[in-house]
Image 1 (tube, rainbow, N blue to C red):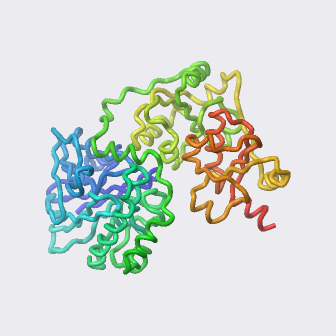
Image 2 (cartoon, helix red, strand yellow):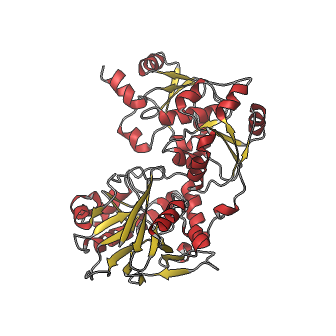
Image 3 (cartoon, helix red, strand yellow):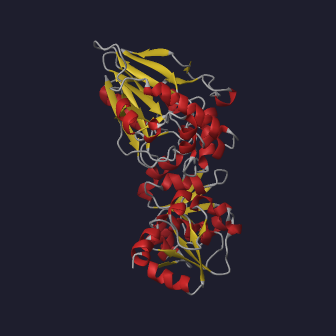
Length: 468
């Protein structure tokens, strides 16, 4: 048996290639949209990709199952559980097999058995894997998707918070309790292969270890320690992070399908500063992907700053308007990787890009903003000349914050500008300084200019002000 692990750090997403070498066949579990790494492995191993298995309709990335079906004719193995709202659509012409609890199918000598594990979503399923190439007649592991993670479990509130389906948080939490009772009955030796790791917004305390075992999770996963359903429900719903706005888009995309990558138009080069300023004047979105430090020293007024790092997809998913054309100011050598990242969350309306350094060299006018230290911020605050804006998550704010700081999470800021107090200078602050820099660019792009960024964020504030 062949088992390979693929991990997208920007999405904290894990997918798996599982193959029967004797038959020369492999399948992908929860494939990412960029299928090139799977095709390369198949060619290297001289095997054929015959299937794509999805544990549920994902909310945080575009699944690659339809891409695989188009490129190599794979069969989609997908859930037929849940009510009518959670059925896959537009499957005409795509080989597929609808699955319910207890169903089995074979890939060469490999046996996959379906276990319905609702809670994260109503249609969620897990796949128990048995390798019958030898003497084994029992499953060796389970692909849990967003059901059980290392150290955590899938959140049940996404349908309500991201998709707006009222009342589903409570019903999902109760369904998760029952699903975990079934999970606890599995043999301790079985391996667990989840779809996400630390950093994913699909849970609240995911571990960074890529796999675990049933026995280990039963002992040490916080969610496995409850016998009382109500206490479990209360604990599960408490402290869940804010789901990015794009999660609602992904639910629809993965349910009904999205345009194939081969059909997307080419991204055109934008050659000069005048073009960029005209695009901004016309209401187009322009993202500058330089570091926050470089951006703060000089940028084109109206552009947003989302640095190209592992957080790019998350903040793009919060801040990009999917209905409007998007332009990028980048290092051109990073274009392909940036497009893969943005398209992984369905941002396909990228129309053009410019060489950021070339464009800035031609600029006749640049904006900038000031970064201040915690001690400088303390002096401002004591003079009562500033208003502090905390753009962290709710749980971080609740754990401790600067006195009288207003809390608006950075991802929601563009939609809540009317809540801001703009009669004073605004000190923007997060935990370490990265998110507040993004927030400053959002405020600047929306015409709010009397602002400064707190370098080092709340951590530096505690070290340099609170403890001294």
